Image (cartoon, rainbow, N blue to C red; front, side, top):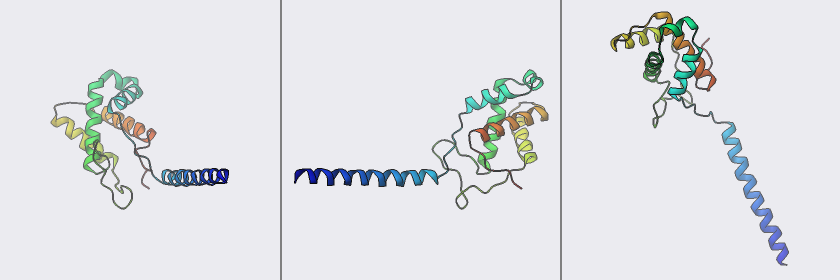
Length: 145
């Protein structure tokens, strides 16, 4: 009689464990993971990936300032959030489109206000590198049609 109790208890424990694992697996499979950006990693990755002629004109601190200005622009559009805050969401996902020329103009304006003079082509190369990095870490959605 004691062995029946052990078998029933074992089957019950396995059933509960399977239900919990199944529930969590389903939830994680249907939930978009959050992408977390490490700014220093982005600066290294983007800076190292720039064309040689851009690397000759732009330092890593300048790359960092361009990246921070671009991220501030994305945050102002509701597409990114600093640690501890949620992204502004419309429906289930952010539904915001940012035009390339608008982002470049905004970033260049912010850099000019900070006293950093960087060429349009160099800023564009850095922003393009940043967007590539954001895409690789899963922080970007599909391009707008």
